[in-house]
Structure formats: structure tokens, C-alpha cells
Image (cartoon, rainbow, N blue to C red):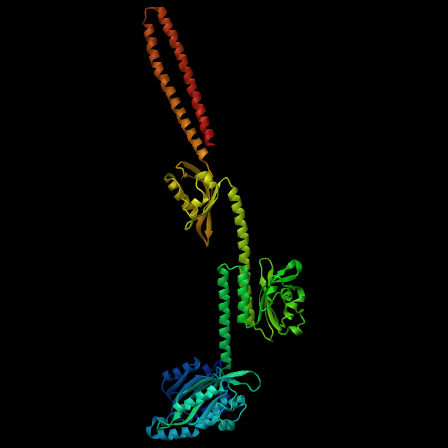
Length: 632
């Protein structure tokens, strides 16, 4: 496999992708005394300290740099170190290392130790150059056989001197044919004329040659992409004496780049659909965008959304690209094994069809047969309680869908599923809001929704009866806009509790009516929480003005009764004192008859006072009873 390296004078080490020694060339044995068979399969961490490091005489630094380059697969073009050969001599070597890219050697490391001892001596330089020139063709030929589509050498006029056999086989030609017609003309190239013009331009100007060539595969396998690069070789006088270059097969890399671009575009399409769904697009708009995106990014002619109708075990065509658009909203597809969509639901997984004409798992529905569809893919669109339907993509050509294609169409179906779920939730919320509004519109109590940043967004018509304002006049105002200053402290304390997530019950607030009078409203508030934060409140308010006025009148009555009772007590004392004086004066009278009349009147008045005392006691008992009853 590595016979070409045996022709090189350089000592060569080949490491595979796992840093295992894959081979040593003959020169390595001759220079350093290590045989290929003894080293092959040995791990680099064992091979290097046993066979390489002991021969490096420049100290640990040079050995560490060489080992680091090999271990980490770094590209090194020229690292000079002094080494001891197997014969005991000391020579100067130039170490180089690179990772090969041409198949089937992609990822393998080529490490070379080139003897540069003659170049270290000025007198031997010309001899060394002569030897290198003498062997250049054989070296290029050896390396050219190793690299796929390998190395080429031409004369100064562009006449091919050497082209790797593998590249000639790819072009289904010979070196002699290329020499006769010129190498661009003997190959099946795309844009051959432009390639030939560019090559002539390089020959004329001496500019470097760098171009990607698209070459037809003679085996009928399409095209391959070859990276062709070359540069002129100059003599001491600066004249071009030949051209040398490489041809690397980058078909796999180009294919990978194309796939990466496609996948990135597909991911972008899914992200755009997600943004459209979050923006509140309706289901028809979202479905139309989804089928267009799938058709474009899978490069197929047809895409569709089918909604499953369980009671009929059938599907309704809801969105489509490529099909007869009059069928959207009307076209019906059978379920079960009578269609690809039905089989997709039965299998509970994505279904790929390579050729509908030979499909045996299910029957092809008329919707697909009428279009001459051959290949297709379908995935389930999940619903809240079961499958919503099936998303399908189809083409009239034979096409092999990949796992990445499945992931893409499944991601689109998931976006649709989320959009459908959101739509169902919105419809349920709308129905709930309508029901709530209907109840609120007929409610005797004032019901309103108030947000910290937007103020009142809804208030029921009862506000007109309670405060005198219409709902339109109140909407958009702050909740506290019409509260009396006397209630501000109570209101703010309640809002602090509400912002902690507590429910407020029985909060009595005094409001100013539109006509300037006072209304008393009992509020019950529930916090509105979004993303873990209280953003507003849902409030019901009951008019308790009559109750509050009645309470005030009762309090006034109690206070009046209290004053009357106190006056009764004081009045009795004030009357008894004059009576005592009058009774004492009657005892001093000489006229016993007159004194007796006075005494009788005094006792009668005293009886009246006792009755007042008993009434005072009874009034206190009645007051205490009324106070207890009012508190209850």
C-alpha cells in the first residue's frame, strides 16, 4: 500500500487516524535501523520514545517539538534537528509533518525526516541540488501514486510530462493522449473552454494555477470535483522550466458542504415558521408557509397537510403545493392501508416510499397516482389528544430520502402541531372570555380587569350604576383613579399584599362618583400572574353605599341615645338637690298644713325621678343589646 515511499530517500512514518504506526519506508530502516514489520501497529506514545527520541541529539526540546507535532497532527514544514543514524554517524535532518486529505488516505499523517547534512555545508550545495533534480520525476511519481488523482508535471509550454494514473483513469484517457491534445482537452470537464483559457493565461503570465475542476465520472456515476493547484518551477535565471502541481479529490468535501448549506437553510426555514407561529399567524397561513418551505428545501414538487377525520377514517386536504388547488378543503384521502397517510398513522412513525408503483405495504391513493408520484415521505402531525393529521412531501422522480430529511419534515410538523395547539387554546380562551363577558355584562356587581402597566382593560356596565361613568370612560385609567384620598393608605397596603400573590377579600374603598357624591365599594381582588410575576388583578366590586350610610345612621343614633342617657342621669341629680332644699324649708314652716302639701308634692316629684332612673337603667340595657346585635 505504501510502496511508493520506498523510492524516497527520506525516512517516512505513516500514522493512521488513531496515531497508530501504519508503516515505515525502506529509508527509515536504512537510516534509523527500525523495520516496518516490527513497528507497524505500535502506538505513537510507545513507538516514539523507543525508536525516535533516543536518536535526537539536540536535547529534549527538539524531541518534544517533534512528538507534539505528531501527537496533535500539526502541520510542520521544516524543523531541523541533529540525529544519530543506525550506523553511529551524526547527521542533520529536516522534519516535516502534515495530514493527508486525498481519499482513501484522508486523516492519515505523513511524517518525513530528510537528510540535509550536505546543505549545511556550502561546498556540497550544488551536488545536493543536482541529486534532487535528478530524482524529482521519480519522487513525484511515487507520491502521485499515493494521492488520489495525485500529481502532475508539465513542460514550460504546458505539455504533460507526468500525470497520476488514477487521474488518467478518472478521465478515461492516457498520458500520450494528453500530450497530444493538451490535458484540458482530453478530459470531460464542465466549462472546458473556460478551463483551457485559464490554463493558457497561467502559462503565459506565470501566475499560480488554482481551480476546481468538475470531471465526468466515466463509470456513469455523475461528476467528481477535483481541486487542481500548480505553480511554475524556475531555474537560476528565473525562467520557467516546468510546471508542477497536485490534484485532490474534494468531491466528498463539496458534498458535505452542500449538505451543510442545505441543512442550515432547512433549520432557518423551521425557525422562520416558528416565528410566524409565535406572531399569531392563522392556521391556514401557517400551513401554506409550511408546505412551501418543505417543497423548496427538500427540492420536491409536492407537499401537503392532511387533517384526520376519525369518524370517517379519512383525511381532508387542508394545504398543498403542486396538487390541484381546487382540492384544498375538499379533497378526501382514504385512511388505513388505502393510503400512505393512513399507513403512517397505523405505523406510528415516519414512512418513506422509494417507488409508489411497487409499494406493497399500502395502496397508493388517487391523489398521488393522478400526479404520477414515485417517491415520498410522510410524518404524523401530533394533536392534543390524538393525531391531528399527516404531513407529506412527494416527487415524480425516484428519490432516496435521508434521516436528515425526516428530521426536517418532522420539525416542520412539530411547528404545525404547536400552532394547532395554540389555536385550540386560543379558541377555548376566547369562548371562556365570551362566557365571562356575558356573565359580567349581566352582573349586578362591578367586574373589571386592571394591569399595572395598562390600567383597566375591561370593566362591566355595572360601573355606570355604581360610579356614574360609562365603561368607555373608565377603560385605560388606573385602578386608583377615582378613589378618595381617605382610602389611599388602605388601598396601598392591599396592593402590597396582592403583589405578593395574596388574594384580597372585603376591601372597603371610598370612591368619588361622577356627580361628586361618595360611593362605598367592597372589593375582592385576585392576582393575575404571568411568568411568575404579578402583573395585575381581576376585581369584583359590590356597591355597599346604602349599608355604609345605614351604619353611619345607626352610629349617630347610638351616640344620641348615649347623650340622652347621660342627660337623664345628670337631670335626676339636678332635680333631687332642689327637692331636698324644698323639703327642708317645708319642715321649718309653722303652718303644718302648708308643709304637708309641700312634702306630698316633693314625694310625687321624687317618684317621677325614680321612674327616670329605672328608664335610664333600661335604656343602657337596650343600648348594649343593640350594640351587640349590630356587631353581629
